[in-house]
Image (cartoon, rainbow, N blue to C red; front, side, top):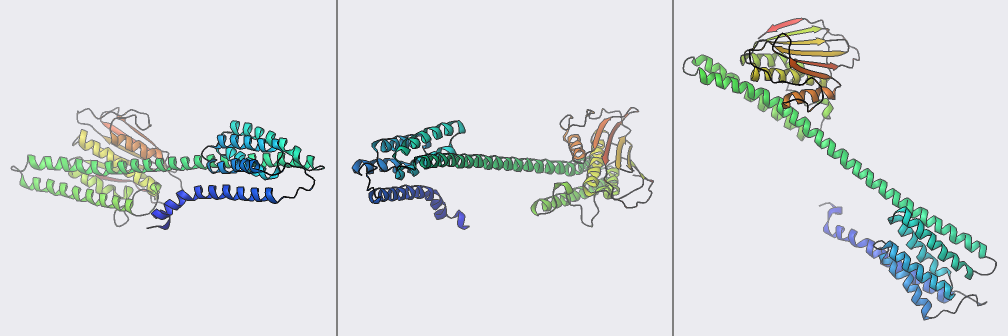
Length: 412
């Protein structure tokens, strides 16, 4: 167990402030009464010390134990006792510290409008006491109590403002932590949706096909079940990789989750994705144009996930519709377009604005959220010539490097 969390340490931290207040009050009372008893007064400037003088000092210093709990009442009581002490003409210096400490406490714990009034009242009491100063130092005594009052108030008010600033900073840090947790949850939910939705859609189609031809065409049923099994294993592998990223300290969310073993990730897995979708019954043509170059990991994964989600929607809503995937590497952006020819069924609509939360379906929301992270845009709408089209444009910061001209076409 950490020392700071030990029960004894916790109890000590709780008791220590109270003990320090008691020690300070008793120590101040002892010093003041000792000075009052031993201070020489050969010229008879002050009233002779008696039991009432000691009683007033007790009333000045002992209530300071409660000054943090009841700052204004303690200051008011202290001011009355100090004022009475000065009025009776006792040696005045020994009572000043108690009133100044009470004023500091009010300034450090109460609003400024309250502490200013308390400072004015305390200064009036202390100025009343300067009439007891020795001849020749009256002006010096007035200056001393005025400066002391101002210093105590400024120090207390500064302590209050520092404490408020610390509290605001702590609240801001807590809010940032909450936002970070929420963003992490959104990212995890997005990854889970992208991984699970695609593979479960493939498994659903393949198991349905296997059940339909189980008796009439056993080889086709076996191939469908094999495809479903491969999709299930791939989904489990991606889930394990995601959990590994969550459990270990690694790159921040902007770098995206780690790719599969072997370092192939993002659009590098497009062939594997197209093959799996083709086995689910959706023929896919892939064309990559422009000067191919290595994309930043986050943008690469974003483009891959958009293609994956778009093809998943084709499997769900337009099965067996011929689909084209176009990836164009521009000088300063990458453009991905997925379009299906449709099959007479109404696709899931998606409004044109790119703001998250404006479409139906978590997949389209996730696509737009991913694109927004990298300052890109996603549109998803019915194509004019029929079918449905998803388009992604993401700006790519280029730092140089050559790529190979690629114009490739694949059919699955």
